[in-house]
Image (cartoon, rainbow, N blue to C red; front, top):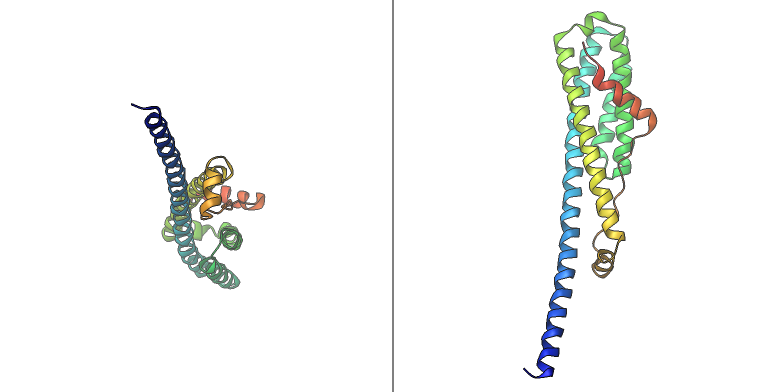
Amino acid sequence: MPIWGIILLVIIVIVVIFIGAIVGAYNSLVKLDERVNEAWSDITVQLKRRADLIPNIAETVKGYAKQEKGIIKDVADARAKMMGARSVASTAEADRSMLGALSRIMAISESYPELKSNENFKQLASELADTEDKVQAARRFYNAGAKELNTKIKTFPTNFINNLVGHFKKRDYYEVAETEKAVIEKAPEVKF
């Protein structure tokens, strides 16, 4: 084989390896982006489940604590805010409102022993505790995916690929404030 044939073969191999690396890097970004989208979807499903459970708990509390009518409005407002959230930041803000309403409901329930012994309330509180665990797990899964995607977007060679296509954007983390952590940690502990 002549020397120009060997040089051409080497060039073709280098080009194929380079194209393969670009395709591999791009595909890894696509997979991570989809994983983060799936994780975000799971968060929204669990937050909607919580938003659907809390009004039922509030109605049960209202039956026992007739003077606590404002809690129903607070829950309805927080639920509407949650359903209207479109970004990570607005969802986190709506989540704070929902958790605030939840903490007020649980505080009211502590004042009514007959409410705490109500089977419907016990079942709803149990479902809520389960949902809180799922929200926390979904949040951790989302944040892990966001971290991996953000890291991949910033590191070579995937940052080069992303700059060429400009398709993948940095994801915000779903962070919980310290005051929220206290409410979240207390909610699953509610046992009646």
